Length: 387
Length: 136
Ligand SMILES: [Zn+2]
Image 1 (spheres, rainbow over the protein chains, first blue to last red):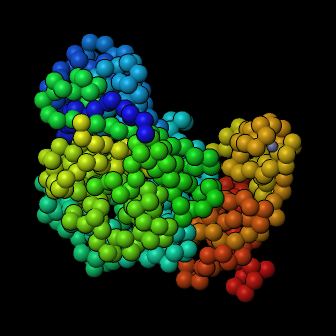
Image 2 (image 1 turned 90 degrees about the horizontal axis):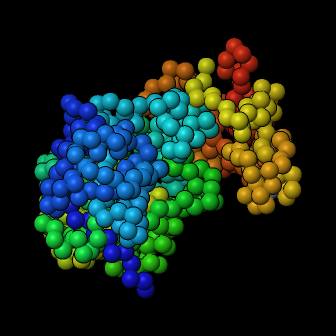
Image 3 (image 1 turned 90 degrees about the vertical axis):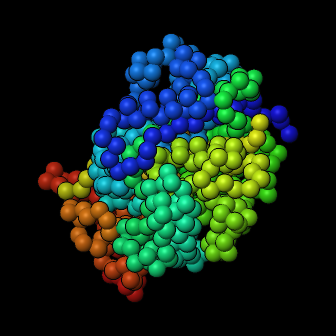
């Protein structure tokens, strides 16, 4: 087993999660980054590296100018939308481990509900820069598959056909996440759990696969975290979460959301690649993970992640959920913040900050004896642990 | 009018083929590998030379959905989206027509047809069942 990375997440920050923030995405970014720096006791002048999404609207130069950062030595962006969210950790880790930078801030800030909604029809690639993984428009949109729900539902329908899974099986994922969110005061669905009956009564978005409550939220908000070296982490205000390893994955014939071309659509090709890399680099396996933060843009995606990371076998995820293993008191608690379905949709980044809280023991729904947290967003993933 | 018709330099031949009611894919001139969506280089042998090869237009429904929300006024109500796996092993997204959602089965055999989608003669490929439920 390799020693792994010596990078540590030392600070986390966020704005409130809402449906209308009432301010610019740049302001949300600045507030979240400032909160993350305050959390660990570092100052803007300490920051010398920065990474965000290719899809984020805020430019590094404006963040630098707003926060009063003196000089960046490293600036990068990760592709693949929310699937790439954990890739920010991989970039930050690479920069810190290699010495390209010493203190890297990662952020995502968006008015995804009040400005550009992902759940509305995307009829052209206007607004999407090429290079963000949006070449799919050409092969999907002319046929009326114009939303992430439609694109994801196609692969999910294949899973239903092969394994006999039902929309009710998907519903149990949403119910599990909403139950966790109900006791997380930061969650949009705080104190608002969902019953399976309510799920089954919600309207179809893409029949016979996803109903309304299978879809994650659309949210406004910002999330940021600060990555630095183990040495530097010793002087920080709060305990850090060590990045045992973080990786991105682009297997052959994969696509970002229109993932229709790889051999077996019931298997999560990029998740499988992430699992091999993370387990291989850390020497850990599924039995070593106490909390799983799994990217739940749609309920069913949790099945793909569970099977890709070997928490259960192919086709067994519906039973794994039904048997309660992903409850807060189960063998593998799933996204105790409520995930993107229950807490908020900050493009996966709020699942990374929750992973840090679980390591620190400061989460709203703390899980006992957490040594390792898996964060999997699909085309990227990480295992975090104690210092 | 269909949204999103945005041929790229690498895919222009495909959309031109549709205008002539031909469903085409790239075939590597060096090793014969077929590929879709179009891309400039063969992933098996690295060759840049390829030819546009007509496909049978016959295949099976690999996966399908009925998009319900958001409403798309340019599509018929109840329209279906299908991922079709052609006999040649190529998958492509399209619409499944002349059948209602309740009757669709994965792996059901389908065949291609073409419809005009704008005044300039642009066409798209569509599929319908063959055999018992269809007209084949
Ligand atoms: Zn070739």
